[in-house]
Image (cartoon, rainbow, N blue to C red; front, side, top):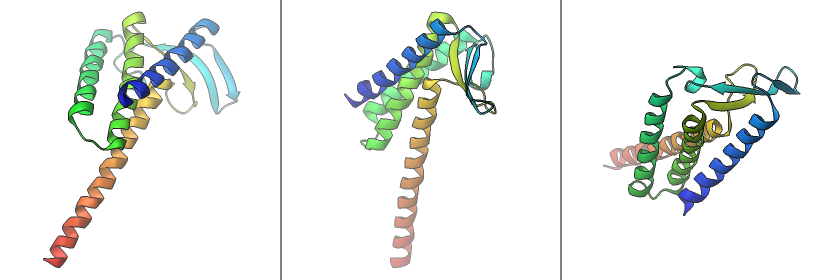
Length: 156
C-alpha cells in the first residue's frame, strides 16, 4: 500500500507538472522566478542525468525498467525498515515518471533551472531524495553496527 501510494503521488505530480510545462511554454523558453537564481526553463532531454548519453532512449528505457523491477523486488523482499521502504517507493515514483516520458516522447521534460546546475524535474528530485534517505539509513545503521562492535570489543 505504501509503495503504490507514494510512487503514485510522485508520478501524478511529475506528470501534471510536465503536462503543464509542455502545454504552456515552448521548448527553450525560460521564465525567471528569482532572476539569475531560479528559472522555469522548458527543455527536452534525450539523455540521462546531466544530459549525458544523448539519444540513447532504448538504453534508458531498458535501464529504467530494470531499475523499477529491482526497486519493487527490494521493496517486497528487503528490509521492513520504514525509512528504506519509503525511500524505495520515492525512487520508484521518480523512475516511473521519467520512464513514461521516454516511452511516450523519447525525451524527458525538464524545467527546474537553478542556473548553476543542469535543468531537472519532479521525478529527478524524487530520485535524489530517495537516494538521500537510503544513504541516511545506511550511515545510521552503519553507526549502530559499529558502536555495537565497539561495545562488544570493550566489554569482551
